[in-house]
Structure formats: C-alpha cells, structure tokens
Length: 337
Image 1 (cartoon, rainbow, N blue to C red):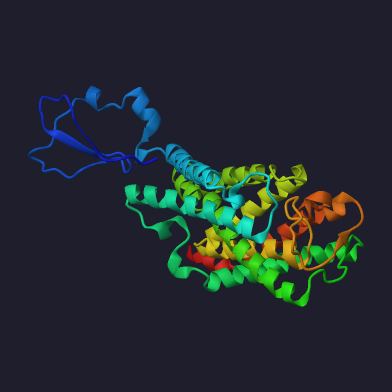
Image 2 (spheres, rainbow, N blue to C red; image 1 turned 60 degrees about the vertical axis):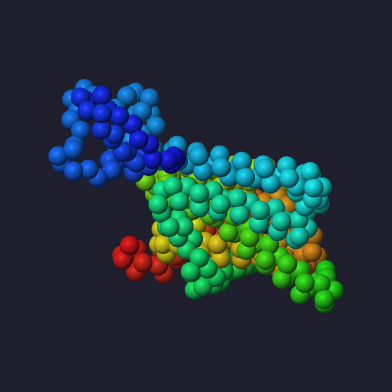
C-alpha cells in the first residue's frame, strides 16, 4: 500500500530532516555536504518497520490489501447510499435483469478503477500501467479477444451438442426483443469484463507481481477469482475450478499482449455467447432475455448441469487447446516481451 511522504528526524547528531518516500523506499535528494550521518545500528530497520516496508518501499501485499480495502469501502458506501435512496438495482436478492446487472457491474468497475486512480496518484504511476490503457479501449486487442471468446464458447457448445447433451430449441424472443436484448447483454458483459478483469488482473496483478512474481500472483488471483464465483447460486466446485483455469488463461493473454483489452474482449464475448446466444447457465445463473429456448440433457460431466458449460469436463479440454493455440499465435509477442 502507498501512504504519503513522511518527514522525520534521525537521531544521528544532526537535526536535519530526512525525507523518505514510503512507496518507493528511497530518500529524497540531498547534497553530499548535508548528508545525515548514521551509525550501522541506527540504519537497521525496526522489526515492525520491516513488516510493512521492504527494500523498495511499502510491501506489495500491503498495497494490494489497501486497494481491496478502498474498493470495498467505495462499494459498501455506494450500496448504503443506494439503500437510503431506495435504488432497486442495488437492493440485495432482486431479480436479475440487464439493467440491474449493468448497474451493479458498472458501479463495481467504477469503484475498482477509482481505488486504482487514488493509489496510482500516490505511487506516481499512470493508470495505463495497470494494464488497461484507455487509449487502447475497444481497439484491436479487444476485438480479437471478442472473436476468440465467441470461438471458445462455440467450440465447447459444439462438442456438447455432438455428444447429445445440448439442443438449440426455438427462438424464445420476439423480433424486436432479439435486437434489444442482444444490445443490452452486450453492454452488460462489456461492463462485467472491465470490472472483473481490472479488479483481478489490473492493479492487483501489477502490484503483487512486484512482490512475488507474475505467475505466482496470477495463480493467487485466479484462485480468488474462482472462489468469488462460488457465491453464485447453482455454481459448484468443478465450475469454480474452471473459472480458476480461465483466470490463468486470461493472465496469459495479459502476459503476451501487455494489455487487459484482449482479456476484456474474450471475457465479454464468452459470457455473451453463454448467456444470450446459446442461452445456457453462466456460472450457475440463468439470465432472462436469452435468445433460445435451449436445453441440456445428459450427465453433468458432459453438460455442466446447473453450473453451465464451464462445469463440463470438456471445458478443461477446450481451455487446454486454447492455451496451446494462443501460445502459437502470439509467439512473436513472447519473444519481443
């Protein structure tokens, strides 16, 4: 975590102040003539100081914890304000609609970004350094990610259908509603992608990488990503494990492309295909306004059951193939990075 710059005096035979930047762990510039003199024993960090401060300033774990605390503070404050104003979209236990989900996910995205902006200001870092540069928003990487996302869920549904576990059914919406719900769900899942990708693979990934390395940080955050999905009704351990694997793949795309926009596009398109296009449960939730009156039939290991296709055994097969294909296609980026 990053606090403010502190000034304090060191008992070294001089009353001159020593400026220390707690985030970067470096002293402010001073002339050699005025350099404070300290003994070896006085320069050793205190025990409590060593818990919070490392060789490069405040330890990454504390900065990550502060980020999560700020995010939760902003989100809970907004929730309480919504309750006082009787804002139905923020009421717990309400019916999920595109408007309700867009409000919740959009608010969460704002809170996640706001917390990063505050800490980025303290860390003297640009927002784009956390993986989501706004100059690249909805650009090439996003569009490519969306194509890969639709292709991934389509490949998985094709396998399940070929093995007799899925039926398309009939179109379940009127002609006007087909377009309306398509646009609404596309917007909703764009917000879902921005929120979940930035929260789990934006500031936190950047910060924890500085402390424990990229892949340990990615694994830790992917485990948290999967655990959070267990709160969804109908979700199960297999589905949560699938989410963990998906999180690792999305971290892989960040590593290769250098931006979160591919992951955001992939995430948004995959959820859109699952919820609207193929009209199946998404992490245990069946949304209203889906395109088809589709149905699953067969064992849960094939269809995913109440979890949805991400609970299918074939989801892991498709994701494994996806890792390999992405590695081959983005090999040049690996070499340049």
